[in-house]
Amino acid sequence: MFKDNVNRRITAVSVQLSHAEKKGISNVAKSSYYRAAIILLCTIIEGFVYQLVKRSTPKPKHVIDKAREYPIKHKIPAKSLGISTDLYICEKKEKEISIDDKGVTFGRLNLYLKDKSIISESQYKILDKVRTERNKIHLQSLESNDTGYTKKKFNELAKSLDFLLKKL
Image (cartoon, rainbow, N blue to C red; front, side):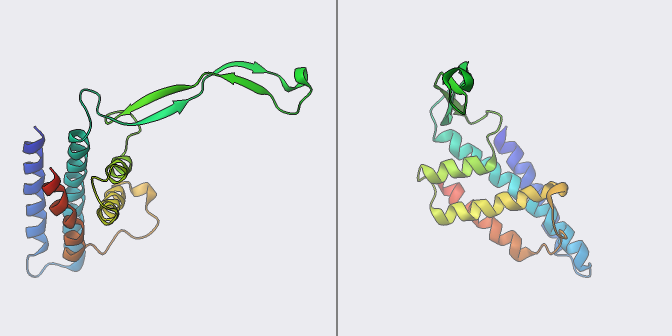
């Protein structure tokens, strides 16, 4: 299913790029077509990152990290000990974080790949640019005009496909 969805996204990217490269269209229209192509490209790249992490983690859970939790078992009021702050008795628990857990983001998957030396620092920086561009889909977080999408910008982001495909 993943491959089929990637193929559909690649077709959609091709359509957007062909519209952007038509003669006689305005710069606003070109930028809009390139923006659509870039957002689609970013979803493809994010999918490849997910697949690369999935392949590099053991089944069935695909654990990418562990988190420590300290649930409180008992509170000792400061007054009872004559001190200024309450004391807490906690239980230390370690929780496995799997690739599909809530809160696992594109950024966290990129960090996993970097921390496990699956990608280099320079590759990580490219993927982080992809993540930043992909996040522009969230209009509420934009602090400036979302304009100026170009073929150059598209090609810069597409560089990540070269190293991701080799690793997959």
